[in-house]
Image (cartoon, rainbow over all chains, first blue to last red; front, side):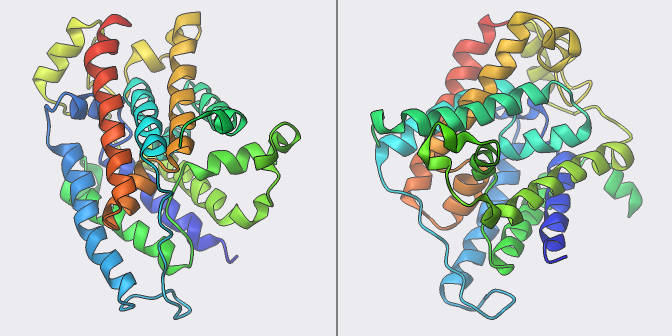
Length: 137
Length: 186
């Protein structure tokens, strides 16, 4: 029962990315062709509001439902990991037109072929951890 | 109201709701990020037999698996009851550009048949394109330590330099794929 709240946030997120067409391959292609403001508007407005929200986390105006301060864990430092990892991610994002969230949403939409993309994504995560000691970070 | 919900949602509705979802996950004492679930599922699947990293207690990430289950439900609900018109009103210039590189009927539905249609899936080339897309996203997101949600939304919102670098990477990769590779694939 304590998990139902996460399910509901997931449903809201899934419906929103569906209805705003963020899960459409065409919208991702259009974004990388700079032919529409739509995706930039979605991400930009989310981040603009997110900056204010996280500011209020830091000064403890906003806390968890239990009244605890909210700490946003910093991402790991290092230019190679973020830049090279990011580039590899971007290649896949533009090829399949889906980042991880939309992959699951498209599965719910009934897109059979996304199972192959999801299989690849899990293999990719596995492979990274299998070879990470040989990679620059 | 219901008419509005059934239309495609504009960016200024979607963006704030995404920020709300992020807020709610932190409010509930968790994090906001999808790609770490890939590792959790690998761990459940027994990946720890080959790679020690995956020998973690996956049960502590149950909340995030439930969130992902919500994504699947949300995709189903939106498709079944909230999207009577499945066309995507992309820029007519984008439709023309796609026709030139071999992708027809762009925007007629959410996804191109040339990539996501069953016919494409059942060819070796089509299967490999889908698998490669997943591999790159899975490998890259874990290498960078986040995807569009963790780095793109949370990281940028925290003004993290690491996330600015990662998102710059997302765009470098995306632009290379879109402008230099996709034109030769179909």
